[in-house]
Image 1 (cartoon, rainbow, N blue to C red):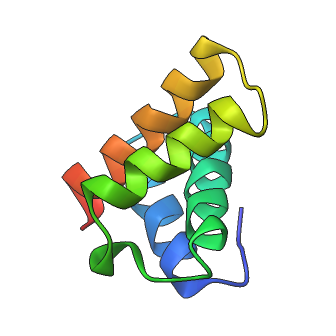
Image 2: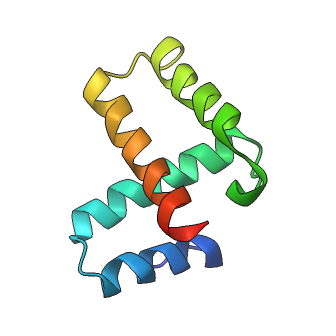
Length: 85
């Protein structure tokens, strides 16, 4: 489960060492990468609540995701900021 991004690889390694399921790791990495790309590849450490809110609003208003999908995206970003940043 290696990506081209050292940052995403670090997150994957962190999760795997803590025995997260491969499916959870893959899902979280996809949402985190999507979040980073949405904000023009800015590092998450340089972003905060406003950027998270804008991203989640984009998912609902522009991509029409289901509430459970939005919750999964939020959980992945919460994990990112709580455990990685």
